[in-house]
Each structure stands twice: as C-alpha cells, then as structure tokens.
Amino acid sequence: MFLKCRRTSFSWECNYLVVTYSLAELYPLLCCFFSPSTLTAHSQTLTPSWTQPAPPRRSSCTRPPWRSSNTEYNMNSVSKELELPGAFILGAAAVPSRIVGMNAELMPLVLTEKEGQPTVNSSYFSSINPADGQCLQKKYSDHFSDCHFGLLGNLFACEGKPGKVIEVRAKKRTGNQSLVTALRTTLEGCYPDKSLALGGTFVIQKGKAKIHIMPREFSVCPLNTNDDVNKWLQHFEVSAPLICQSVLVSRDPGLDLRVEHTHCFSHHGEGGHYYIDTTPDSVEYVGYFLPAEFVYRIDRPKETHGVGRD
Image (tube, rainbow, N blue to C red; front, side, top):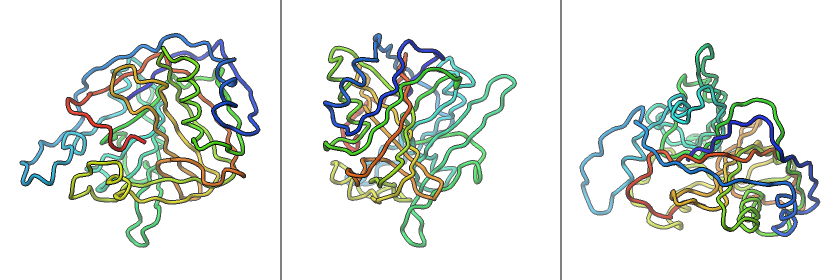
C-alpha cells in the first residue's frame, strides 16, 4: 500500500499538547483541525523488479506465499507509477531477502530518482543477530546500493517539500491503544463514512516500546493464525529515543489493506516493528503527520487472509 500526497501547503494545522492520551482525548485533536475530503483509492498491477517462480508444492504442510516471499519492488519504479518521480518515501516494509540474504525489518527513508536527481537511500534495517539473538540494526546504504523492498510495504510518498503539518504531542498513556491505533480509531469515529489516511513520523522521546523482528529464515511450517505468527516472530523491549515511521488508514476503502503499520529505528542500534509503549506512565511522544490524497494498492493478491495484520 502506498499513500501519496502532492501538497506542500495545507489548510489544516495543529499544535496541540495532549497531557494524557486516550481515544476521548485525541478526538478533539483531529476533529477540530482536520477537514478532510474523500481519499481517492487506486488498485493497480506493477511489474516486479524481480520475481522467482514458485517451486513445486512438495507437501500439504508447506504453502508459503511464494509471490510475496520471492517478489521485490523498486521504490524508484513505484514513485513513477504513482506519477510522483523524485518522491520522498517513508514507512514500514521488509528487506528484499534475495539481496540482503535473510529476512529483516526495513525502515525506508528514500528520496527517489528523477531527472537530475539521483536516489538517496537513508533507510535502516533490523535483523536478529546470530551471535546473541538480539536486535541488530544497520544503515542499509552501508551494505547495499539498491532501493528495493520485498514481502510487503506500507509507505507514504510525498514531494518532500516544507509545508504545514499536523503536530501531535502526547504523554502518559491512559488507555490500552498505541498512539497510532488511537489516531486511526479517532479518525474512524469522527468520519465513519469516509476513508482517511495519514503518513508521517513520530519520536518516542521517553520510555520503552515493544517491537518485533522477523527471524532470519522463513518458517518451514505454515503460519495459519495470529498466534502462529506471534510465536514465530521475536519480540523485544527497546528504549527511547525511537524514531517511528507510520502509515494508517481510518477505514479500508475496499482494497484489502493493512490499516496501520509502523516501524522504528534509533541511533543506539535498536529498531523494528512497533506495537505499543511498555511504560505508559512515563512515555512521551512528538509526531508530525500529513493527510494523504490518494491510496494505491499495488499488486493486490487474488488470495487474501487476515493473519498478521496487527
């Protein structure tokens, strides 16, 4: 899924301090300052930059999603498909395992190419350190020269120019939802008949958070339930400051979307897929978001499921 926003100036702007955050407290934050129009949804097929034919099925107990696990996409190609060459892209995705040689969480930060402008890839990725089983975060461009991603991606593309944004400041979680889920469900509650989307970044300034990182190798047995997926993933508690990149849609506009996805990285070597803070009494957030004008569903699969979308 890609969210796209061309605008560099917005009619809505918010500087709002939320002392504690829950659904009720975030409701006026967005309802008072957000005057959205309907999100334009697109579903289209993009030729993968690389794909490997599925091997023959050898038994009934192994049926990995071959198209997903063996297909890669180039962010330069995608930005052109979105009619936004030179786009700045951030969000949450997986590394191209063929290139990296393993599974890993990808935190894309890419300025895509256009005439007179080369690609700038400042992405990070996190994997399981085989030496100690802990988080191992690296800068992608220190090891690889491409700007591909694999498996899946929930990404926000914009022109990358200065402009007005929605600023969210929050501390002390009072409910059981993450900051991202609270934002999304607030939008859904305010506008139940619309699909609205935000993309952006937030920093966990104080506290700790729960994350996961995929194992380096794909599961040899099928992951048929959320419990199967959670047992396969490796979970960690990581410390602030954490830089998070988030994409969310208030309501699926009929494209079979993952409605929220957030990855985080840091400058102290920790990062991965963000769930929620684990220190509700002391956590502090500051975030900056932009409403999207378009949502693109690239290569929607013919077969779908609801597993692993939390």
